[in-house]
Image (tube, rainbow, N blue to C red; front, side, top):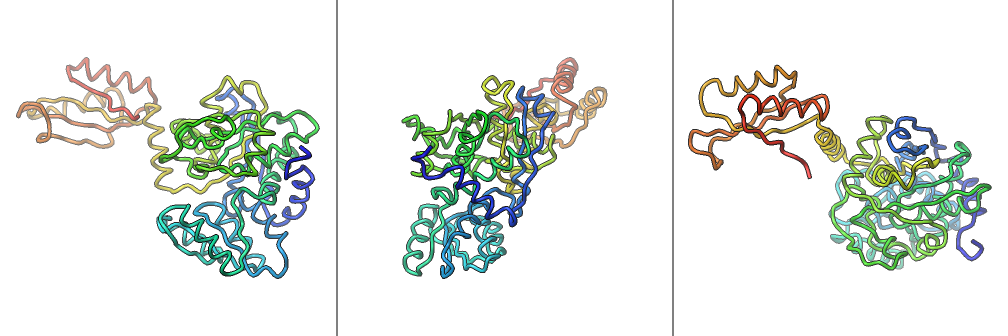
Length: 404
């Protein structure tokens, strides 16, 4: 611990600096999620920060330690770091420039500009934006603020753990998302210096196992479209990697399906909106229940900035996987009353029909054959099974169209 760049004293000092300008978000016990996962689960609602993410802790801690004559700060980010730095820089009267790839969704650009920052769109990738930010840093004499690989950022992130343990002192394990490693580095720094033993497990998306590769000397592929875009980092930090190797017990990987399930559960059970990265800790408990059974687990809901259309898609997909929504492909004879008779089966089973799609032309059936696809709403998987059984008993060929 003494040779690492961040100490518990650094985290405590960071908390003293920032505590009056951030939200001390609640840490609450979830009885329902505890029953589902087999662990004792405490949630810290960092999605309740002003920018809906923990990132403003590290950004503010860094800004408050800059020289008074700093001409401005600059960062490369299309995510929560941009929002946190822009918001607090504007509040403190420090000019902020954020370089984003041209592919950044317009809503993120306007949100960042709304916090008072100057947004520069450059390049097609994050690497392009990062290179331009470094060029502007040198050309304009600005101070570059890294999203994770800076002891001041890490100490600020660690204040999350201080608040959790103040509010829920029985926690004996942190299960924390890893992108670049800033949050888990701060959490682990606090855990290892605490008065009782606290384990630390990191969580990465299976598509982006960058810290897993670094610390395990593995070579798993890294890339793809993940729901957890906030932790989709191909190269973890140098500073954070050293801390993770020294202080983190293990890193587990979670699938896209587990991430989707976690986001949906948090909406259904806790009535809270969390982005994919913020749900990664719960995804780990769902996918690896034996690893966490009986433990007193602290989870950080580290961000809530998820696109509303994406959230809607995740929720609907979860309904389909649970059997509450279904699309059935049914073969009919193309004659009067065929659809009416089929609808009678749905009525008898008390299943609500939502959409009906007829297909006469693009089908391999004979000319008098007909395929109909029906989207319907059932109570649960068992109710759906009863419906399918009843349709087959009525003499119809039926297939359930399943999600991947």
